[in-house]
Image (cartoon, rainbow, N blue to C red; front, side, top):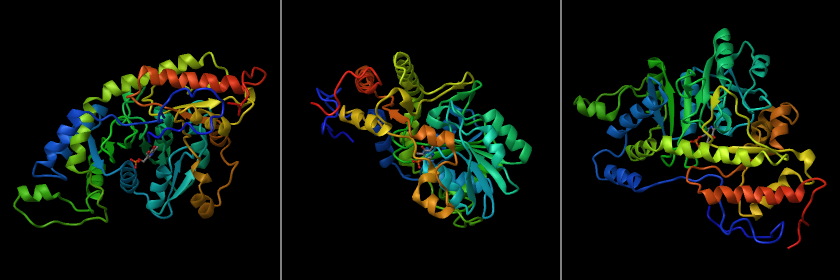
Length: 410
Ligand SMILES: Cc1ncc(COP(=O)(O)O)c(C=O)c1O
């Protein structure tokens, strides 16, 4: 990730920074390392005391009654789709502007993902578009808290209640976000989190489902353990060798080694969130002076967790398209990215469902303008200034009627 990318230098002159700044990066400190080493020296490497400890602390942090850990956010989504009872013949509604895993978990259960377009401001699933896509086969809605901004949960839960649907909130971007003063993780039927290294806390790979319903928590626990109704440690404590497999599950367990890391990381969640919010505020205030940049919208009821900071380019004001701006920023050693290629554009979805461009104008229109700027809690003040400096340099160059440079010269 730390390669130096001073290659063909689009705008000429010195790049905004000498070394490559990625869009996301984990922070691991000595207390994390010590906690992992302690587990490595202990009796239990997997599904020991650290799993319950991490789950309880996590549930308390998001104000949920139960938290069930998984080997990844994707495994957690699969389990939630199973616990919601999704099966062949069913449909579930989700957003096209997400990572493929959100829609894939519907397919894992043999059900069909039905996409609905997003709102213009937040790029989150639009409630009126959900209504349009509901059929007699709909069983669930999977909103995504895009970039860490909570979805329109009040309206979505109301629709779900009216139609008897389960809401699985994909909050892989939104650990620590709040909605109407309530914590994400305590609001939907099930809420799914990811602990991938670019997220707010990491366990290497890992995920969690939170819920307030004990029956769902029990199904989730069984699903991640082959469908077995007890855990090895419980059997050891009870001096019993018998176990019963009661449903078809998987091995989706998050080991004690990872849970020990998660426990330490969780202690720093508030500090990580505070830093991300500070960086977002800094970016937003800098971009107020740049009309070609549309910063991410924040609704009054939301306190986002800022997993990403995706800007939209006002292409009408620019002489370049997103691809050229992206290349120019990369040449400045700024590790920008794009979130997301709409899921229905992927060849698998196109081939299987015959999906085509033009079906979801808001999501597709946004996709052509989106660029995610570096956003992680370990960013220094200088990193943030470098990003703002590079954006200023590149956009000044490509602003219609005001171009201050000769792209390609060096
Ligand atoms: C919106 C969304 N959903 C699901 C996932 C899958 O999580 P994981 O990488 O932990 O499997 C991600 C991961 O990046 C994500 O961004």
